[in-house]
Length: 252
Image (cartoon, rainbow, N blue to C red; front, top):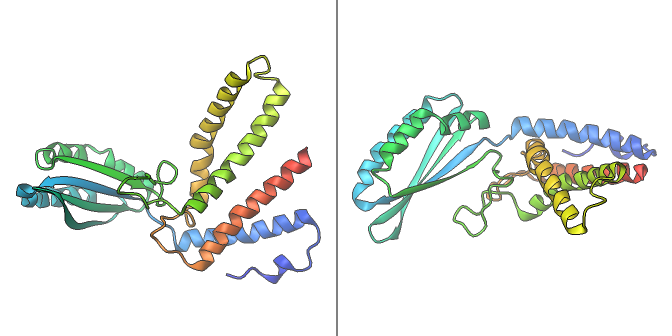
């Protein structure tokens, strides 16, 4: 996946360089997303009494059959149970779908809800963690929990958040200054309002789009990616940051 020589040779104008490199990297990203797109999955943990292991197996078979009846179902993986305390086992299952919407459709279905009502008479408790790109709630990484590691490496998370946060802060500061909002507020209240606006934009609008564009790169840390994808993803992120710095510097 070496960049063509036309990207690195014979170009002197900064804007032309940015446009050409961005065009080449965009093509690489599209190809990477087509050939190595991670699919949405859900990890489910069940706490089951030893005496109900066979009942749980039968119930789990019904759950998988239910998922198989929905569009986009790929497969279900059930792992060997772990003995966590006297008389109790932890069972883990992972279900995979082709699209996030298809996984959500099954999770919210009446079929699954009916089976959960039956299952509550078998297992003591259950928890689940869904991830679309290997991510959820930005990165599907609950620090300190057993499911830590579903998210990408910390350095990728930092770059992705900065990539989304930087333009919001710059544009928001520019607009608030021009509109004169919060000028009469005390600094503490103005800062709180600013942070609320920034966080809402980042969480609801910007980060989902960053995750969608960089989903080939922001994969769970335990899933090893080809070095070419790592290089392209890192280059896209850093180049986007550099382009924004150049853009906002020109505006100043």
